Image 1: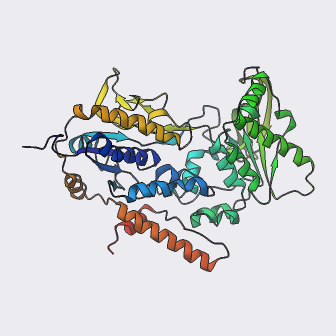
Image 2: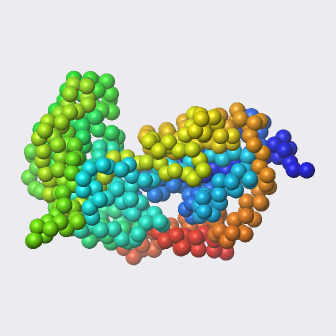
Image 3: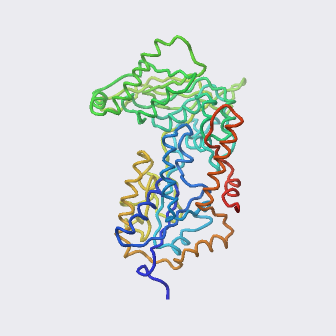
Length: 475
């Protein structure tokens, strides 16, 4: 007779080993003693290495945010959560497989795609999604090793932290990135870039930006890069004034921008690269280049904006005035969008799994038994990484309430999922494997430090095959 939930640990699969998945696993593991329950938790990820967004979505020159990995490492190093990496849910393991081996499944798959921008010319060569570029410079194993960096003038559309990251990496002198974990192919690509001017364009005014003060100030830390602002962009309506008065964060950012505007008048020498910040610009068309015969080249040659004005409420309206900027590349940093999981109800407008407080819902609004969501795939790609903890607390709270009503797994033994993976030839990786890969990357950093002038903590391994080989190597 099969075991029941009363006689064995509740088996839980968490899909996604980024911050959302690790936080959820941590909270659930710690709840055992408090609630007199037992859980057996497996944390799946499609990549050979854990940490998701922190490893593949944060700019390499953000050591403070990268430091979150240390906290996640401590959780995983306790040994009460089992990591199963390099496992793709949908191809290696189906949703039906998960339901057969686990009593509950928590999806923490995040958001890795760009929000689509519907303007003419977005399909031209030289028009990129910021999420793809971030994945490239962060050494994502599923992205090409090369990136076309042949533009002298670049436009970055968006007024959030990702836009700042993209613009900073594009404009920064490449040798300043050598002290980070940047992969060698990324350094070589950036070092060959002829870029001279990077423009960041935002639709609203300086008081409505979505940056954080720290991210904004980091722009001024780049050597040999001038920040350029435009006095006509510093227009404030009543809502802007109220926002500045009521929010220290907004006040800090507006003051920072205003000080830069004043300081640029006192500049006596020009740097080799310039980072332009534009506000009140609405993109309307990406312009195509023309050859000597007047035929379209299929490549980006510029971008057209409509000049906007604040309407008193903090929103903007068009002025009917247009301006073209000559650029050879456009990066769209207007947001991330979640990916659909085959067999799980999905809100295609918001890019999230249909859910209520983390309980996944079917099309009729009923809870799908034993199925949950947390992180960006639950609430959308908004907020900082720390907000993910609140998501996880809510979702795990719902799971704890539901424990007595969970559908029981047919194959709950911990070894059964391993047997399934091995029978299918899946080269899964483990926490012990990550420790090997971690050690290897640190050794690469030490070697690079000995042979170069810059101290490097680590050098990231990029090819998936190498990551798997190192992780699964026998001691």
